[in-house]
Length: 378
Image (cartoon, rainbow, N blue to C red; front, side, top):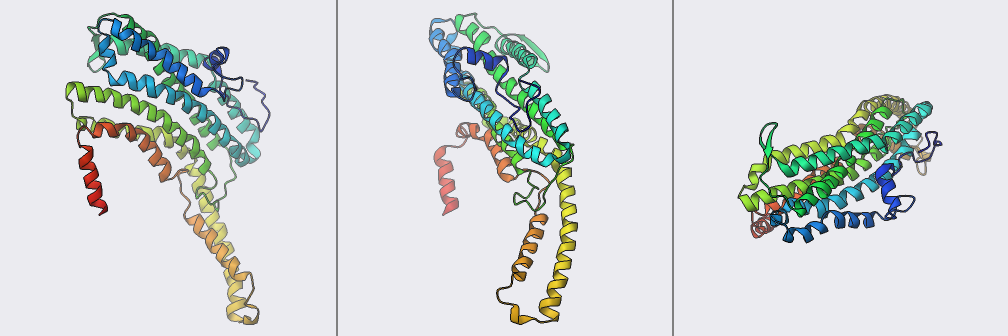
């Protein structure tokens, strides 16, 4: 990308070696915003179909086909990672223009932050690092089993064509997309942090109740898709342990709670960088509008109560202006210090919990859940 991209342009683009490879293969158009569904189908065909064909012909291949995590990763998580990344790029760019509008006299500094973020967003070194880590994780996941904290031993698995394909192609693709998604989110978090340190023009009377910064939560809502894909993978792993090894779902309660906390912290926590700016804007606006309200109330009281000029009362705009000042003061009082609301928190938590519903049904039958819901409603 050109480092001197003009002000007002979209600095974050779907690029890097991975997207260059997709464009070279004609799976994506030149702009990178079309054909993502085609890419997702191609990824599934590359990662999952060969396993389906090779496993019946391979010694020990049935173990792969009965592992729910394998199908969860390859059929669901991989396509979601691809779709989420494409959406995230567009939504982050949609937030950048409002950031520019808030930056005021620090426009040049903000553009410097955005250019640095754009370089990291499509960094070839970062993608190669993700790829190397993905290959190592794929091999470790395939051949090593944990026996204690930071201790592993070789798994007693027969070498087969299906297992080799899974370890060399399928698993690395899953881990590469996972790590790449978190890398790009880390870049966006850095952009947010550095932007939050710049002087900003915030309006405490903005109807979003967070000084006009509510739009910053939109990329976080999208990033919940990444946690959805990751949670689907975790759900598949736990399903295998529950169904094939008789492990109760309740034994994963602590891990599930921790995963939910991590999703909230990573997805919404970075937005807290703007909390101090929102607090300052709120306190300043309360003081300013407090003085305005006092002056207006004194004049209103003098005209309509003390002087009792009631003949002009009908049709006057003074009463509506009084109500407007009251509404503005009420909005200021409702300003949240966090530029997100309960809806965003529910989206992040729901992304983690949704894939766990089938596992919950292994503990509590659907009929029992439905009967309790009906009894609660009635």
